[in-house]
Length: 210
Image (cartoon, rainbow, N blue to C red; front, side, top):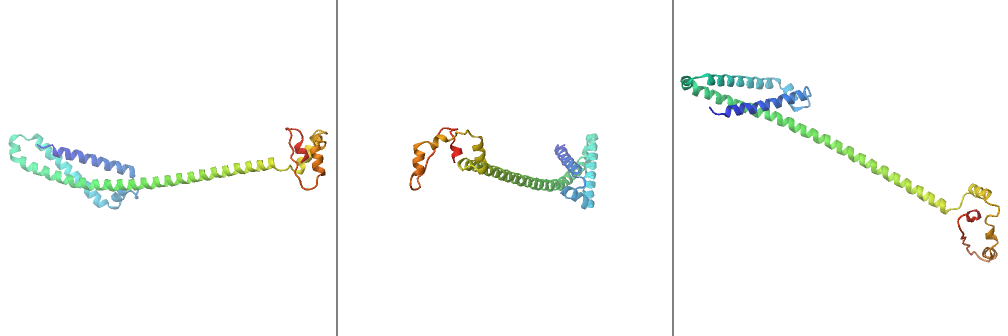
């Protein structure tokens, strides 16, 4: 006896287990093609299940008869039983095609769902990256403004309040050296709009003069 029927039943069993797993996983989710097919087409689904059950029972009976038959019985009934077994195998192949199609439909839907989820994740990551870039640019702009402000304060003239504080807290003779220098006197008494450059070590009172 050929091993083909055994292989057919074995592969069919694997398909039925996959169907069972999908049904347990999807439950009553009508958006799932598998659940939609079962719930919305119960008569067709029940018919297919009943057909499968009947074919498998028949194959079991045929195999049981062939296993227990002696040589004389095989000579008389062997061909007839074998033809029935071949017919059952053909019916199993038809049912396999139906259930494989169901699994393919569900698999395609799962792929589409995964693609949608992946697309949403990528969009969220893109938005997050844009927000991070914008926050980084704003932080860099703020830092540059603070640096520019600090530089302008360092280069600019002190305010009136700061000037008063510098004068009040300074040494009484601070900057006196400048007023006694010939360069300052010449500049002060010179005609025109000449410039006076103040040079001196740190703490010599240049800021207070300004």
